[in-house]
Amino acid sequence: METKLLTQHYDKPEYQSLKGYQKLGGYEALKKAFSMKPQDIITEVKNAGLRGRGGAGFSTGMKWSFLPNNNEPRYLLCNADEGEPGTFKDRVMMERAPHQLIEGMIISAFAINSKKSYIYIRGEYMAPIKIVEKAIREVYDAGLLGKNILGSGFDHDMDVYRGAGAYIVGEETGLISSLEGKKGQPKLKPPFPAVQGYLKKPTIVNNVETLATVPWIITNGASEYKKYGTEKSPGTKLFSVSGNINKPGVYEVPLGIPFKDFLQNECGGMKPGYELKALIPGGSSCPVLTRDEALKSTMDYECMSQLGSMLGSGGVIIIDDKQCMVDLLNILMNFYHHESCGQCTPCREGTGWMNKITTSLLTKNGKLEDISLLHKIASHMLGTTICALSDAAAMPVMSFVTKFRDEFEYYAKEKRSKVKGDVHYAQAHH
Ligand SMILES: Cc1cc2nc3c(=O)[nH]c(=O)nc-3n(C[C@H](O)[C@H](O)[C@H](O)COP(=O)(O)O)c2cc1C
Ligand code: SF4
Image 1: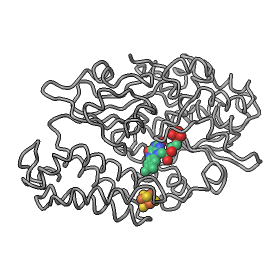
Image 2 (image 1 turned 180 degrees about the horizontal axis):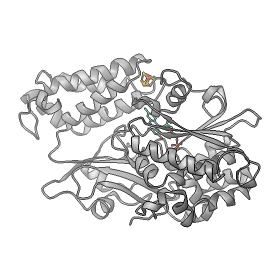
Image 3 (image 1 turned 30 degrees about the horizontal axis):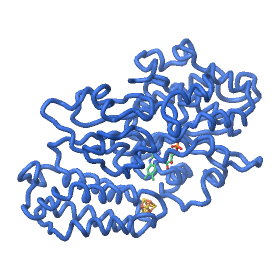
Image 4 (image 1 turned 180 degrees about the vertical axis):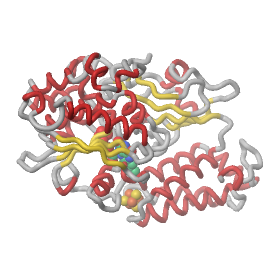
């Protein structure tokens, strides 16, 4: 069921270079885009129904059309921070096909009339940073960036900016603060970046995968794109899959395929001796699904939301019967507590308490009342903060303690894991 619209040539090493990419049809979409009106490119992307692949799944064409109709300079920012636990598809895209992203960015920049773009890459991604920087140099040398690109009259410059390891700069306004040279803290919305973003100018922030999809849409057209996927979730999506499965990795499949088939076909099924227990369908911020929910789900935005979860960034985390849910939740809480930027009280204090309470359960100091307390703290963190990190930390907690309450109660009463038995916390976590 793998459907390789974007990843068709990912196994060819030469695809990384400008020459190799061009040989396989690269930069033809850019030529076509220059023969179109910018507004028609926006309409094509809108008609294709492309939804942002960074997490929220918002319509890309719609976001672009929110830019004010004025002559102010505007910026295009590619979000390559990829900090969501369970997600690693942007790394693969940048390593295997840097020019697909760059071509998508030049077309998108032309569509929104932006003369400057940045690719904000997480600092730990040393290999992708080098590969993308090299690709940008090749593109400048070939006259595909800079002044009057391909005689179109359109000028555009592109740079790479390295993050410094904070998850919160993946949030678009945190990313903008960081790029402005400030502490990478999110800002209140509105104003939305499309109206007032980088340096207070209109700014579009899009994920790597979103931008890398644009050349395919321009080459083949919106109606062709809509032949894949579902009506409301058109096209294909790259999923990063981890867990005790036979073939972990990154797979491009049409949106809407049954998870059950995906697990069996692409992932090669569970490893021998492991049973599926639960699923985090779109990265660690998405509520967990039980085995039954997972097996009846399809991998698209609507189905995941009907099941009370999200497709998010497509970070599929497969949880097997040998994993302890209390332990897993503690790992997540440790992460969110560490990554909360601290501006908002519910998030700063809430993530701290949820980390402390899950740790106290694991260190045999937990009480039964702690389970309801965890749920209560999480419920106070929803919708009350500057950015969605608070919700992202709270939602997994609520789903874990609701759906796997037996494991939490067992830990509180018996002072050991229902699944793993007596585990020494310090040994397991340090
Ligand atoms: C805490 C937090 C972390 C985020 N991290 C990322 C990230 O690493 N990469 C990403 O593309 N979007 C991330 N997002 C979503 C961005 O804010 C933004 O919606 C996205 O980059 C928009 O691009 P898209 O419309 O192409 O999806 C994050 C959001 C939040 C709340
Ligand atoms: S919700 Fe958390 S991460 Fe987001 S701005 Fe507030 S304190 Fe910072």
